[in-house]
Image (tube, rainbow, N blue to C red; front, side, top):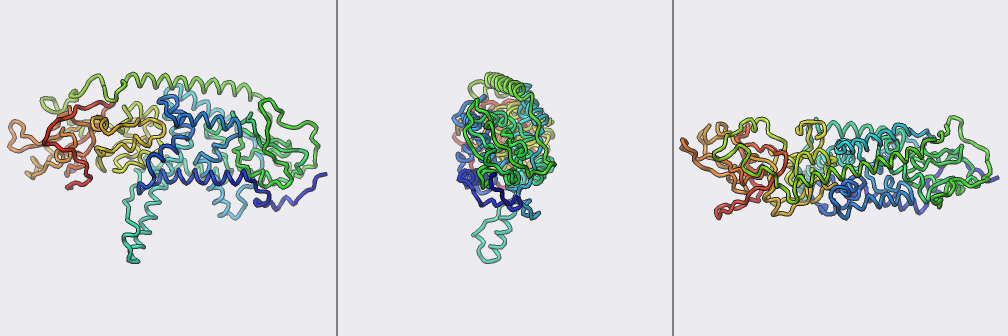
Length: 574
């Protein structure tokens, strides 16, 4: 009979494996890079590093793969291949939300003064997690993938946590440190940074989801990954037949229970001597705590049996309260259905993207109407309702509002990286729940820098397509509308012209309309790109000039005028 050990005193240090140490180092690096990319309030992290790291996350990579192929789109195929070979290493090493749950579990254990994991085996919630995956796939097929993935994609949820919740806290901590440094006589050591909290409507959804994730991680480890996350469920289907899997060697196992106490996924059925590898996140903690070598990571092959024949039975010290998970009789049928659904979803998404690209044309902004059909400017009827109810403005490179709604997963990386902070998460500005948390431009707070292409440089899922600087200069995302009765030139007789002064394209110029003694700002829609510099510069409240977004982005004409010089400075007179 194999020797037995004291089950009440597991020691994580004993038998710690090289695999586990490598996994911890790699996972820590991934989590820190993700946090740095999304919290970077000093713009220290290079944009290309932000883009590359976030683009290798599974959902952004898969979206790019079927919509606008890029080298990073191959990451989703690599993740599937790694999962088929070694199990869910994506969940334990690359996914920042998964790693964050491990951190929360350990912090919770420290607070409660208990071991990080002491979780008995639990029955898998297969019906629920498979239903969430099926609904997600059906939503993608139905054209609601942007909504479903925005709420369920693990990377996007982590992005919103970091950008909306963690980043303001980091800025507050920085400012406290800056205050202390100033008090000590070193004011230049740590500069102050303006704190910007999202509006309550945009702050509440990520806060509620974070609370749910934190509670589930504290109580049940990776319960979110194995119940709610569709990426975890999809990779679990693949990992069921992984070539290398963690399994129990019944000839060596003494059923001491150490592996149960180390498992964060509650997937070890020690009574049956089996591991539900669809829920195992390949953390290797169970291997590191097993001194007898009863838990091994070994080759199973495609058709190999999961358990060796004739394994001797050993006496069990596992409490009867630990239930044995029932066999999943419909597993093969579900895998076939899910695979078919996934292929259908990918195909439908590709077709939808092709239609979108075809409609938008090879060149961005080649809308059928063309410029000058927006009822504003010389010789056109003015639409003053646009000032009180302006259309939402989607980021340049997004091509259209519809594209933002259908494809963006609202990870908030563009919001965090925007140097002028004109991008912010939307609440209901897009007019429906599909636009919740998606990026939009708020010109009351800032404006879109004429030469800036950062949002298109960092977008991981290809929703905001890369824009060359020259193309950005003529990309129209909205149009300026003026309300001269609000302008201080006519209302107060005050000299102004800040809006025209800061217009980078020359679309806004000070002219005397018929019947007026004073020059007032007039917009030529042929040259307006909707950057918002005029609205931000306008000194009155409510604004006398407002940018209203357009449904489909267009290409503006370029004004050739020697006297007009593009303004690239951030300094305003007001």
